[in-house]
Image 1 (cartoon, helix red, strand yellow):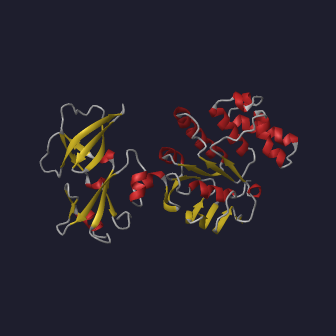
Image 2 (cartoon, one colour):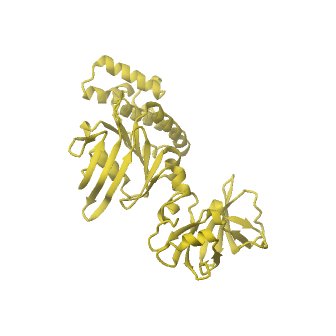
Image 3 (cartoon, helix red, strand yellow):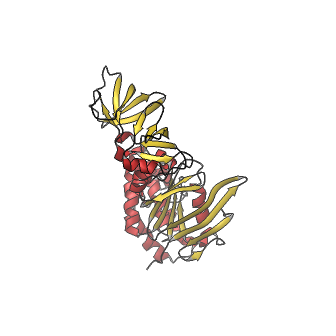
Length: 364
């Protein structure tokens, strides 16, 4: 039975010169969990992964794999396997030899190596490729071999750094599904780095969103989408990104965004009043905005001018101007816009996010 493989990071800080790549990070990955580290370039996700692997040494904090403190252990002694963006296969070796190489290094008996190579090849459906060399393989096949070389070691945890980014879009979508299914089948704790939010949302049990080395939110995909912790998360998760408006809460219980006003219902007003000042940011996702071609009675509608359209086949994005704001709205592909200059939009109260402008945090 494989030992429990929680991975815990306690107050991890890593600096490069004056720059804090990772800043006092606390994170616990459960046994057999698939956790995605997500964020823009330079947010600290790869540095975090390299600290866990032992390829970087944190300046402060503790790293536990299972129940072992591993800060002072060499990478080879941490019982983790890393899969990189570059597949790092040995070009002069066959697939079979590439798979066997990690076990040969650990002096595993030859019969056991043969058994494990066959088992992994079958699992990854690469049995027919064992005698080929990497140059004879497609990108997807090379990726499977790289995964196989990690799996064959039977580590406590997989650490994956953008492993699908070299694949074409169609293959990447296919490999996401395969990789997630494979991880559940073999039940190995996995920490996966990506800057691709779709990859994160579709693969992760939980997503850790980082910005400039700081953890912004750590939650399941549905939660980070529906209940973003702050303005950064709301803007980073979702495509097209959330529309934001800087507002002032008036004494009449109305949000004044200069270009329009937004009356707050009782429950939203109570939320807005918890802000540290009268300055509030209103956010709403493009998918949640309702659009009308003419003004409706008894509705708080906002007038918008049509800039351009972006047809996507299954939907259409409208780029609308509200004063100085340009917002995006997702509508059905058959929404009629020919000859239209002005439209009316509605922000349903149950779909609106409110954030404290000074702190950036969600108001709840």
